[in-house]
Image (cartoon, rainbow, N blue to C red; front, side, top):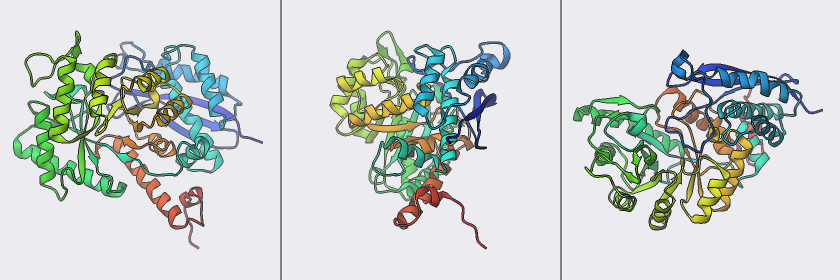
Length: 437
């Protein structure tokens, strides 16, 4: 007899920014218990699922008691008695209960918290690590691997509140480094970056997701600071790592043009294409996320045509995990990579459908955190389970980011143990604690 959902209960907690978010607990009738929480973003795409907030005086309008109420009074009764292994049916029920395209009735935050809780409970009930459960259930990749990491070093834009226009300046480790080596490199460079900033008197604070937010003049300064940091380390620029940027261009788009602080007049879309081409040439930028506003399709197509052979052009706000927009982007060759944030959609089943679509187009898949995170590490298992090429969990700094990297470390050693004993234990057995008597 299959286990069924006995109860679901949501509550309001705080994320890493000190803002409210929703946490969801689930109980099965076989005694299994799981808990998970929903993240939230700062630079939010206009086509993504609504992060339902109370919009009242309390907590500056950011409370989530309405979303909590959606779970406790609407979703929980509807899902009681359901089989948690039937993820598709449960997610379809959530979509039907909401009945809106942008999840404005129940809230995308309420829906993704429940969707994640159900999947965690199903994996626990099956006695499998979450990543293995997802991999086995959806078969999106032929083998289990740790995705490559894109590490944020410097925050700007709406994440940094500095002169820097771009939201994130990142390092992308070269493929010859395994996960352990890449994490060690990122950790060392993050510490070295602080030393360089202090030496230059570039008074710094910390951005929303933990990257440094230094007092620099323009985007070029950020690249130069990172190059100097690398020179002060055992690593070699271009040989061991490349750069990436999350431009979040919608944040500085106005009246058809793009305003960057390094030029007195706004850039036309074509001028910005040339700007990125020059940036790629000068700084070997491998990953460019959201280089244009989400409705500037022509510019996206031009950049992908001209840089897509040497760089990954990542759609975040362009796509927001939306199947229709992803299909259009594939058809028009508007990008060659997708950023996956499950809370942009509202359910895991819909998110997985979009990942399948992206993979069928030979796109690179990056599973990403949000600026408002908790210590929940669900997204790390999810990334491994769906066979993501990359993950973007922020810098090697702050507990809510480190939780994801530490979970990847656990999975790394479990997979290593399994591979060393290929004829022996399954990943489920490799993950189990051993006892000595």
